[in-house]
Length: 278
Image 1 (tube, rainbow, N blue to C red):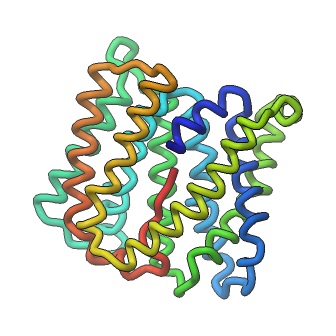
Image 2: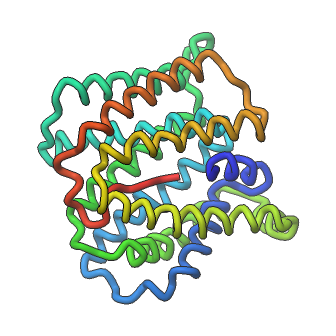
């Protein structure tokens, strides 16, 4: 439900500023979990930028320009990208099934990005693909992170993302104060939902599930996320159902499924399990 909700809020709030508000709320609520200061502070800062500030800035920019239904499908390309990066940096071995899955996923995303009549790409979905790439780099960096509690890491990600997001928003956006003054309970309720139920509850529970269960069991369940987001976008935001969405989305989700059900042999050992975005 989070991406359609964010898409709805971004219509009235500058996207990077909204991302800053989300991480401000996250940092405040998780402030009791800040101690101790991470030993690998520089690495945590890099991870925070990848899975926090930079990732969400690009994602929210994409949501302003593209339908939530398309954004949630293109965002799934993160898992194949993680696998590709694992091949180059972690020497992950990939056989034909995951190779086929990556090809299908990338082909589906390209089909959704490309605009044949204009010989160009949809800029909103390009932002989302870039966000997925940055988030994947964060996952690879987490392989080098010593064991750290999930809430401790999330607290520092929130804190470290505030200044960059608000700083970029100050220089590139306008209307922030007006958005705050005109913000009603729907806006603040949406931000509270994103912070409490998505970032704190949802992501923390997901980390625990990955630690407890085989990823091949969880993978089919995680694919319910784009299905729910697409359905919500269509029925609540009245987003169009296009042939490109159906074909490109089908290829992408099929490819992601093939990649996900073949467990990554290298990444499961990193500090807090897989990164879940959105």
